Structure formats: C-alpha cells, structure tokens
Image (cartoon, rainbow, N blue to C red; front, side, top):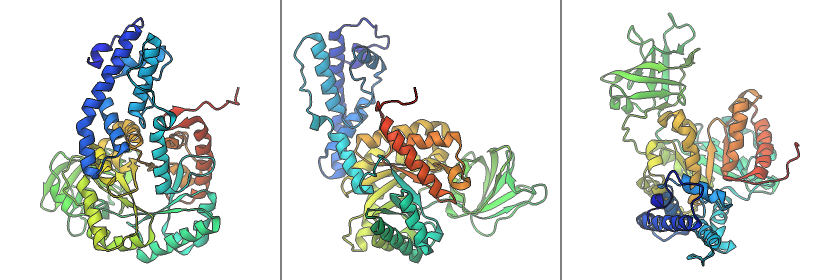
Length: 501
C-alpha cells in the first residue's frame, strides 16, 4: 500500500484508526525498501556496517515522502507527529505503529523499542561530540569555538582569559600567520587547559583553495570613497598588477589566477560573503570584466584578502593545495581536529588521508569538513559515510561561503536541513559565520544576531570570530546557550517551568 494513497493530501479528520495504522505500516515498508540501496552504498564507502549510517539511509528515504497529512492525523490522536525522529527513524515508526494498533484494539505488527534502543541515536551523537570537542560544558549543551587572532601567539594570558570566559575549542586559521605562530598558539591553549583542569580542543583549519582578492585598485576620480556600487565595473586580473581605465573603475588581482580564465560570460561573481554580486560581462585573455548588479546602497569598499565566490563556475580545484600539504606536518604536531576546506567528494577525504599517511604519523586526528560549496551539499551523505572509515568526524556549516554560493534565501532553510542530516548520522555540527558579529566587533549586539545565536543551541558547537569584544561575546553566548538548553534539545522543545507569568 502506498503511503500517499493511504493518507491523501485532503485526509479528513474523521479517517479511521485502521486507515491510519495501514498508512504507517506502508510508510515503514517504503522506508526499508528505499533505504536498502542507500545503506549498501554507505556501508561500501565506510568499509563496514554502521548503525548511524543505516539510520541516515532510513531518514533520507523517509524524507522523500510528504508526510504532512499523516502528521495531522497523528497529532489529533496524541501520537508522535514524526517531526523529531532524526536520530531514531525505525524506533519512532515502530513506537507509533504500536500505539496506533493499540488505539485500534489489535496487536501491533512491530515490537516497541526499549529505552536503550529508542535513545541510541542521541547517545551516539553525544559520544561523538565528546570525542571531537571534549566533555559537555556545565550548564549548556553547545560548545563555544573561538578563532584566535594573530596576537594570541605572543599572549598566553589572553588565551587563558578566553578559556576562563568559556572557550571550549580554539580555532587556528592556517590561512594566516606561520608554523611558529601556530605552535605558540596551540601551546598556550594546552597550558590554559592544564591551568583550568579541562580539555580545550585545538582546531587547525587548513586554508584550501580559497579565492580571495589580492592587490586592489579603486579609481580615485569620481570614486573618492573607493566603494563598489550597482552599475560599477570591476576588472579581475589573473596576472600582473590591477589596472583601471574607462572600461572598469575598479580592479583586483586574485589569489588563484587560474579562476579568471575559467569564467564565462553570464557567470555570477560574489564578493565578501555576498555583500556584492556581479555578472561576468566579458573575458579577454587574463582579464574579466564584472558588472555589479547588487550592492549596498552606500557601497562596499574593495579590499584585499576578501573572499570571492563563483557559484556558476566549474572551478576544478583540488581541495588540498601545496601550502596545505606543507602545513599538515605542523597540524599533525599541534592539533586535535583538522578543518578541511572545500571538501566536496568522498575522494577528497581519501586525498587528505593519503597526504597524512605520507607524513608517517600514527597520531589520531579528528576531521571537520567545511560545507561551503553546492557539491558538498549534494554529496554530504557520501562524505559522512566515507569519513566513518577514518574516525571522529564533524561538519561545519560555513554559512558565509555557502550563502554566497547558493543564495541567502536558500541558505535560510539549508542550515536547518544540514542540522537534520548531521543528527540523523550522529555527526556533530558547528554553527559558523558571523555569530554575534556586531558584538564581537563593536561591543553591542543586534536583535537579529541574538536570535541567530540562540538558534545555534541546536548545534553541538558554535563558532565566534576574532574581534576586540570577543570575551564579552563568549560570556553572553555562554549565558544564552545555557538558557536555550533548558528550552530546546535539538528540535525538541523541553518544557521547563516558566517564571515570566
């Protein structure tokens, strides 16, 4: 029986218990049938059978069905509406079928799971989070990650202060500074952890083929503030110095020159996490002219070291650059967790592991994949399965780059879907990019970013960027996450006693 046939879109409120139970049984059969090939593929990628991957296959199969009419009938009967089953697909279906059978007055065709089976998924996720990030902090579920500034290399007292305020994970961005600075930062983090008697995880984030502006040249005449606005033309230069003329009032070199020659007319180009968007108007030799289509009313200043995203362009770039390969030796020496940028396919994980193997170290190292390209979205289940072969794994929802690739509107729902997929697979998730950005930078948060930070309580970790008021941001986030942990467990509202009324 097809579940849609059993539960039509216009499912009347008077539908009988028998039809409901049959629809649930049909759904369970469909999930098992559709998940079988997925589970086999995941097991092949992982090199073994895995309960978390099997649940992921069940979840993906379930979510291929539109269950809204069925949910309405379940709610009317006081049963689970299936809306919070990410970590326990079959156990939830079995429990609901048993309850529906009882309402009908007949024996259940499924055996209701015991508590250990029903909650096994969330226990797997908790264990994975502790392995990756360390023990759960007192008073909150979500860990706090802080990006260390360059100055931290020479200031152990500052690192200790971050830890005292509540930093659980220290992020070292290998796109900046050098090996000596990274070693110093990691050493300060270890010392801070020893002083406080707790583990503080060291994440080292290798740079990857990040496309950034190099030298920039804004036209002075007629553009005294050097700001890009709608209608302006920007010349990207693959080789040599930027140049301006009557065709383009702005010009910039790029960190990866080859991408300029891969642009085609009509490709979109986004600058600085999508603050500016343009379209390729012409390509000639080693130069491309970008016509700005969207920008802030007061413009955006063209600066070096700002990110460029090319959502329509086939880049063909390896996620592991020569610099990354050189940096790996220091990462393996200092880090607990490696951040892997621009990972898109299972083969990218093999590429990284081969490079690590060549260094001849047996030291275990957790892996954090940054989801920042559309290819990574499409291949995320397979990436998770391949990573299961190697050990501790987590996913960073790199919302800045990802939004610049897929658009802000799509990003709003995609960040939710990524949390669901990670929970289904018992993979810890990191909520990243611009969290409490105004507070970190200026000392005063906005209403919107407070709400965004509160939503981060559904992730296992949230990342703060560096800035002059980061300690205040840690304090606020620690309190906020603590309060939200009492109200929300992943997607499940928890009903603590209210004191406001």
